[in-house]
Length: 147
Image 1 (cartoon, rainbow, N blue to C red):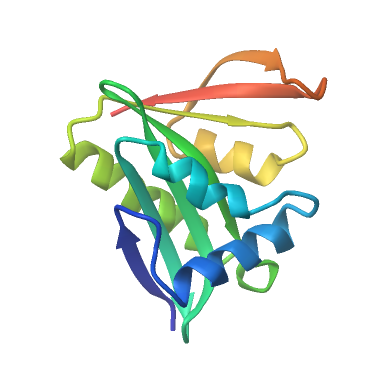
Image 2 (cartoon, rainbow, N blue to C red; image 1 turned 60 degrees about the horizontal axis):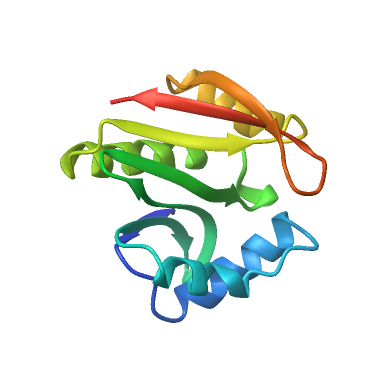
């Protein structure tokens, strides 16, 4: 049974470490230690976790990047738990929280190689508003949703 937990700060243990382990599993080659550091520099953040027996099986992290706009930064679901609606529920919870806190727009960036995330965003009302090339020379897609 999946339990959903919401946080407005970096989650206490065991959830913080479990979330970082999952992030490293999904995004190999990325250092998850930057998540806590990055969030400490943000004025307002929101983290929603999907948990099974104290193990994080899905997460969605975002923060305010300017007045009225929330940036949906990181998220993922354990491959063993995909296709169960967890990513959609995490997104629904994030958008509900954003509405309740006065945000008018949610923005996110993704890559074409993360097609499941791109499709999920489009299914949940995001529009592609542009593209750019990041510092590694990778093309990125900018999406926004008006709340």
